[in-house]
Each structure stands twice: as C-alpha cells, then as structure tokens.
Amino acid sequence: MGKFAVSGASTIWFLLISTLFKNVISTGLGKCPVYPQFPNFDIRRMTGIWYEVERSFYLVELSASCTELNVTLGDRGYLFITINTVNRWLGNPSTTYGIGIPSFNGSSVFRYKVNNRMPYVIGRLLPGAGQYNVLFTDYDQFALIWSCSSVSIAHADRIWILGRHREIEAALRAKIYAIMLEHKLDPDRLVISKNNNCTQRYSDTIN
Ligand SMILES: *[C@@H]1O[C@H](CO)[C@@H](O)[C@H](O)[C@H]1NC(C)=O
Ligand SMILES: *[C@@H]1O[C@H](CO)[C@@H](O)[C@H](O)[C@H]1NC(C)=O
Ligand SMILES: *[C@@H]1O[C@H](CO)[C@@H](O)[C@H](O)[C@H]1NC(C)=O
Image 1: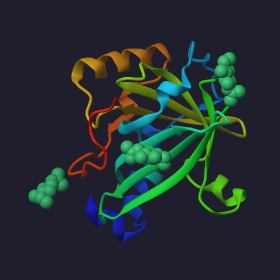
Image 2: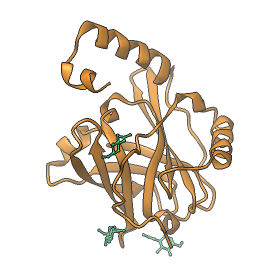
Image 3: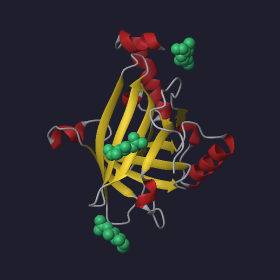
C-alpha cells in the first residue's frame, strides 16, 4: 500500500482508483436527499473530543490516520473544531482548524469552513469545507455525520462515524449500522479508519 502513495499516477493505480470510485463513492442523480433535523439537537453535548472510527472512502483523506477532533462551542453558537491527523505513510502530524456554523440556532446542520489564516475563498476550496449534518448521535458514544454536495445534475455524499473512543464495540457498531440503514445509507461503504499506533494525545476518559 505504501508504495502506491509515492509512485504517482501510474495507469494501474488510476484504474484501481476509478473502480473504487465507482463502487464506493455514492453518487446519484438529482439533488442531495434532505434528511430531517436531528430532534432536540443539543450542541453543547457535541463538544469535547471525538475520534474518527469509520468513514466512507474518500481519496483526499486516504493518507490520514488517527483523526481526532476537539470541538468547543463559541459564544456566537459556532463550533470551533480542531482536527488532528497523522499521515499514514510519512508519520507526520497535521492540524486543521475549522468553524461549524449551524443553519439556525438549534440546527443539527452545519456549514463548515476551514479557519486557517488564509483568505476565505481558498479555505472554501480546501477538502472538508461544505455542509455537514449530524444525522444521529447519543453524544456519549458516537455521532453519525453526513455530508453531501450537488454537482450540476448529480450529487455525491460522504459519511463518518465519530466515537468518543478510537474503537467502538460490535454491539454499538451494529446499532449504528441499523440507524444508517434507516437513513438509506449503506454501511458497506464504510472503511475502518486507520487508528493503529496513535499516540494518545487526549485522555481517553471524557467527562
Ligand atoms: C480543546 O480545545 C480547547 C480550545 O482550544 C482547549 O482549551 C482544550 O484544552 C482542548 N482540549 C483538549 C482535551 O486538549
Ligand atoms: C439559542 O437558543 C437558546 C434557547 O432557545 C438560547 O439559550 C441561546 O442563547 C441561543 N443561542 C444563540 C447563539 O442565539
Ligand atoms: C506499531 O508500532 C510498533 C513499534 O513502533 C511496530 O512494531 C508495529 O509494526 C506498528 N504497528 C502498526 C500496525 O503500524
């Protein structure tokens, strides 16, 4: 796997990627589906440390591992999000700062933008910018995050499972998959995030 990362776009690699895209990236005709707001969404309880446990395949994030988020609530009701990742092949850490702006007070839908010290136009083009929905969460164990963008007459969407720990146990995973199916999202699209040998940046006990 590591060799592919540095060998550039050989034809075989390109074909492999195209196949993966066809199979794993969910695209559809028409606009993004609209999900209802998560009832009684409590933004305060979304704060704290989250780990990326599973996600749908996304090329840009292929090299990221040990992804962890530190979410705090600003006084204007915005979420300030610090995302730490470690490059899976090079081992070097990177940090991104972003802001999640709720659609309205109490909404579980956020516009996310990267908050590095750079003009907004550039920040908007960086991977990660866009609209994110908290489809479901119990706040204490997991959150199901979904993002979708419409591209002319089609749409493409992405899914993440965030956990309060780096691993989630089988029973909880089954529950999350059931919730996904209720939302007509296919759990087969998920890949387990690379969480091997992550240094424990934050204490694993929340609360
Ligand atoms: C999360 O970020 C906030 C604000 O930057 C910081 O004060 C806090 O210490 C961080 N939490 C952890 C567990 O590092
Ligand atoms: C959002 O609404 C809640 C209760 O309705 C209120 O306490 C809070 O201050 C509001 N937040 C903002 C940022 O307006
Ligand atoms: C984790 O780190 C150890 C020691 O540095 C190494 O031997 C092992 O191969 C690593 N495991 C993975 C899955 O990267």
